[in-house]
Image 1 (tube, rainbow over the protein chains, first blue to last red):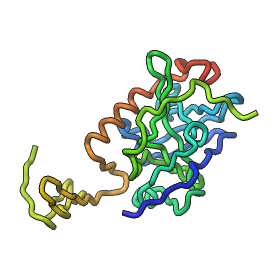
Image 2: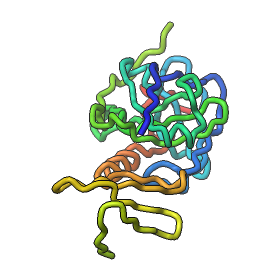
Image 3: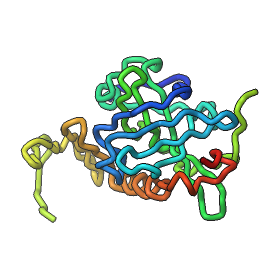
Length: 147
Length: 73
């Protein structure tokens, strides 16, 4: 199995609202085929990914470039083919944030959302080097956006 | 659960469109090849369950997002 490694987790376009298509849904949410990625607020790198069919419900997400700069998931060739990506520049990556009952935030680096930035087709991928990443990578509560 | 015995290089067909092939056996280890339509997720069970649980724990309402993460609407 050939793997394509995005050398730098590519930044998402965050200035405008985007509709992302996930033909396979995400794990545990097979029917969530469409998501709305809301524009980034001025002081935070966190983003809101809304389930289109469940307005007001969704996920806090963050680009790994803003919280885990060395993150290098090996995305499999079948996943790259599914998404139509042939180079790292074709994709951007979002990772899902969990807020625990005690208020601490962690991010899932084991199963990133990889999105083709041209077609906005996405998939939750399990990278070949999954065991080197944490399911609950600790986050600072509020990574401050660059001035 | 349907239990079938297969030798190396023999296949199983699921739903007429998913093929599971025994690629190699080495002692306790079985190497399986899975051919499925691209929209069908295929994962090791323990990985599938941990991701599913993590996604479910992460799902929330916009109104419940703490204000130090995203501004209140």
